[in-house]
Image 1 (cartoon, helix red, strand yellow):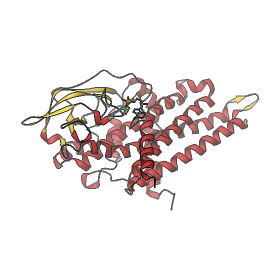
Image 2: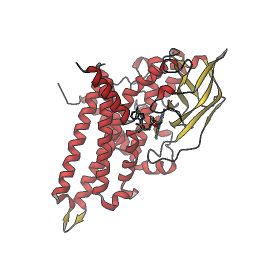
Image 3: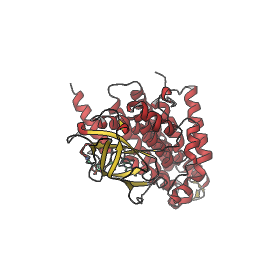
Image 4: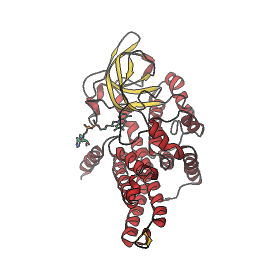
Length: 381
Ligand SMILES: Cc1cc2nc3c(=O)[nH]c(=O)nc-3n(C[C@H](O)[C@H](O)[C@H](O)COP(=O)(O)OP(=O)(O)OC[C@H]3O[C@@H](n4cnc5c(N)ncnc54)[C@H](O)[C@@H]3O)c2cc1C
């Protein structure tokens, strides 16, 4: 057993960290205020090979492992979790198209997605189907040329901003087996967007409903086989959970690093506040929790990479543990900044807001506990 990163893995982390510190961190608050991320940042990230992180090399991607990818997301989140998380969603979709899409989809949609000229969004959730995603109602009806799509997707990250939408929709009966995946490109007749959602965090990412009203989808835009769409959607999620956890880890690490500096500078009762043992213990607890979270996350990523039979359970457990640890640490860091932590200038309140949603999406943490408990009970001797 070797817990050390390889030289190559350290280089991947350092490259993403350096890019984030130079090109993302100084602008993160400005982009949050503007409610959007400049598109140039994506093409720059793609030039570093981050547009198709775990898309196979045969398809033009970078072919990294899931563990390598967590390093990228941890490092980029140290600059801004919202930007890093958007990249994660794009990559989750790209990997789905690589794994299950036809050669035609790979040429038309995946190739420009890898260069990030085309940004991808993942459309599973609906107003009436969140955790119970298999209850989705958006329906695709067969026509001579393909499908006519009707329905509404809710909370879509990149809604109205992305260039193509990977949409889970019903082509068959009720339940998971009646679900297929299609790609709907921006500009398709019958595709429209709801208003911009006002959110607590992830504010630089536009979130909107995505609506389909007799939207024409060509037959070539079906991903894989009809009826297998839910399987594809879930296949993307194990890795998505690792990425979101890495985003919590990176954000919380930044909060802790800034807090360490701040506590050496801030004085109260005649000494710097890092001299109070009660506060030193809080620092120690945060360090312990973050190191435990990092180790657990990397173990879960290794399970997914090695196709371990309990990989899904580990991804769920890690997602729960790391996202809750990340939020707790960021919140404690805000507390240790006193009133200044509450001001946007210090950047800590943004981290608290950005990290909070990681407990809700890619499956809520209640659903993560459900997956874990189900597996535990099934494994009972
Ligand atoms: C900022 C943001 C961005 C998002 N981006 C996307 C996106 O890009 N694409 C996409 O498809 N979706 C996206 N989502 C949607 C997200 O995945 C859902 O919000 C999430 O899956 C929860 O669904 P819900 O909101 O309908 O909550 P519900 O499913 O209604 O859950 C409500 C509460 O009940 C709990 N609960 C539900 N069922 C159970 C159960 N069986 N046992 C115990 N507890 C249960 C939940 O954990 C939660 O606490 C995004 C959400 C947000 C907030």
